[in-house]
Length: 394
Image 1 (cartoon, rainbow, N blue to C red):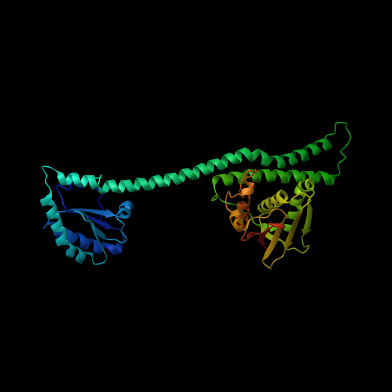
Image 2 (image 1 turned 180 degrees about the horizontal axis):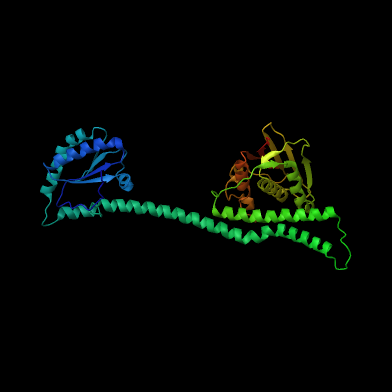
C-alpha cells in the first residue's frame, strides 16, 4: 500500500474531496483494501478526488484533523467536514455516500465559474485555498520552530555553564596545585641543599611528602576529567573500577589533606570510625571524590569554631554507612531532594563560586555503587549527609 503525498485541490474541477488515513499495521491491510475497493466502485458512479495518507509519514495531518483511529475517511469538501472511522467503515461510507454526493452536486450547481464568487468566498474563509499540503507544512514548521527554541535554550544553558567552568577552573585547581608544589619544593630543598649538608628530613617524612604529591596530582587529574565530563552532559559515561577498599583509611587520608582548612577556621572534628569496620566493594578514587566533596561543603558552611562530625557505621551485613555532619545553616526542606540534581544551586550560593555539579556527581557515583545518598537537615543544627556502600565479599 503506497500512501500518496497531499496535493493542492482544485475545487472547481473536483467538488467532492476525500482523505483516507491509513497505517502500515498488517491487521489493517484487509480492511483498507475493502475500503479502497468500495471507493473505486463509487468513483464510477460519481467522480471525486481521493488522497491516501499514511499517518506514519504525515503525522501533522493526523494531528490537524484530530484523528483518534485508523483507518479514517474524511470528507473535506464541500463543507461541512465529516469524519467516519471504525471497524465497519465500508457500511458507514455507504450510508454517508448519498449525502456526500448530493452536497457535491449542490456545490457544483451553485458555483459560477464565470464570476468565481464561490471560489473567492472560500479563499477569504480559508487563506490556504483548501490546501492540505499547506496545512501539513504549517503544522510541521510550527513543531520544528518549537523544537528549535527548546534546543536553543538548552545550548545557551550549556554555553553559560561552560563559561562558568572556564572562569573558575583556575581557582578550583589552585589548592591541589599549591599543595603539590609545596611538597615538591620541600623535597627539592631537602635532597639538594644549598649548603651541601645532607638532608635533615627523616625517610618517613620524605615518603609522606611523595604520597601527598601523588594524591594531589590524582585529585587534579580527576577534577579536570569530571569538569569536562559535566560539560559534556549528565549522560556521559561514569567509569567505576571496583576493588576491596579500606573505607576508614581513605577517610583518614582525606581528613589529613583538609585538616589545614579546618584549623584555619578553628573547627573541631569528631571522628567515629570502628576498628572492626569491614572493607567495602568500591572504586577508591570515586569514593574519595564523594568524601572530599561532602567534607569540603561541611568546612565551607560550618561557622568559625564550629564542629564537623564524620562517622562510619556497619549498618547491616550488606551495607556500610558514612555520615558527615556540620552545624551550619542547614538546607531548606523543599530543597532536600533537588540539591542532588544537575547544576542545582541553593539561593544562598548563587553568587558564590562553584559548578553546582558536586552533589549531583556524588549521587551518580553512589548509585553506580548500588548505594544510596541522602541528607537530614535542621536549620538550627546544620546538615547530615549520609551514603551507603556495599560490604566486600571475598
